[in-house]
Length: 331
Ligand SMILES: *[C@@H]1O[C@H](CO)[C@@H](O)[C@H](O)[C@H]1NC(C)=O
Ligand SMILES: *[C@@H]1O[C@H](CO)[C@@H](O)[C@H](O)[C@H]1NC(C)=O
Ligand SMILES: *[C@@H]1O[C@H](CO)[C@@H](O)[C@H](O)[C@H]1NC(C)=O
Ligand SMILES: *[C@@H]1O[C@H](CO)[C@@H](O)[C@H](O)[C@H]1NC(C)=O
Image (cartoon, rainbow, N blue to C red; front, side):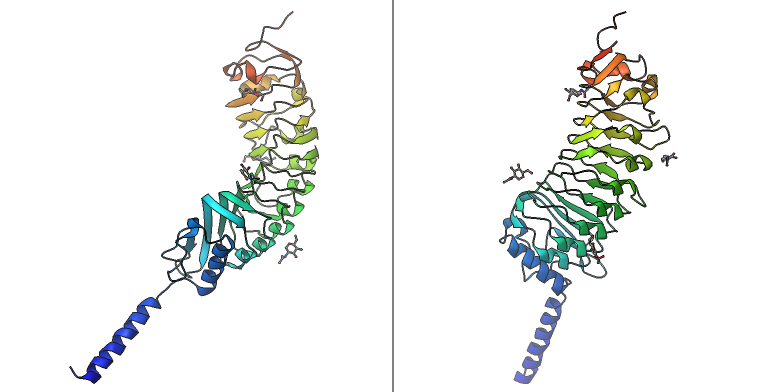
């Protein structure tokens, strides 16, 4: 072969080589943002696969690219050692549908308000972290969200009323924080879907807004707060309610006046100031869990249905409940 021919061959193979390397799918803007996130957490071992010379769509863990646009649609970092704050640049992944930081050792600081720019977001889970500060009201702009979980952090302040704008939510988990103030009135006006509501383990005060009685919730967990007054309007014959946990609050209402939805399976009201007696209708329910202990209830426990399948701890420490599985009523 002549030198010229060899040179052409060399050039050709160079071209071919660069064509192969140019086939990186990862969008350069997305890659840049992800590398900034990695840097914000001090290049942790957990994100070791995020390398500038590899393709984020094919070689990186914890992320997912859309198969047609090749834009990052999912960022899920969980179960591991990660130390630092979630950086504001996370808001610059405009195609993101799923964002999860969960069960990580040392993720602190506040929820970046830039998350509210992620208008394609469907699932947001920032849970089992050490996040502080309040919940950004602007999260209510993420109307495509079907799942919102901010559980088990150290979040403070009131629940933003704007969250009721999230009309596609299947569930909202704000449990295990230090949220204060009242449950917003707006939570009786989720237009669209009625989400499962998990607000337990906060420091919420005041009465439950009666507006919540208008909505057809399936699951309500308000346990372990400082809520007061009446909650009987959450019940009702024609409701979809299946699970309700009001335990460990300061609720005070007449239990004998409750109308139970036919599909109710879990009813926990332990540790409140509920009075009255247990209605006979309870025997018609297919209950899997019943706990009315530590209240001011009185009278005979109705006999039948599932009611005697629970042990005495479901009923004990009331004012004067009696009958199986507690002691017989005295005449
Ligand atoms: C961080 O959160 C975890 C559990 O969510 C908790 O066990 C740990 O004590 C927290 N760390 C600090 C410094 O608050
Ligand atoms: C997002 O929400 C905030 C506060 O709820 C509001 O002031 C702002 O106008 C909203 N932004 C957009 C782009 O809708
Ligand atoms: C609530 O939902 C149930 C079951 O989906 C339905 O049968 C009932 O009519 C609804 N009730 C109200 C008050 O909207
Ligand atoms: C009912 O609640 C009380 C108080 O928390 C608890 O001691 C008891 O074990 C519970 N019983 C059942 C069956 O859930």
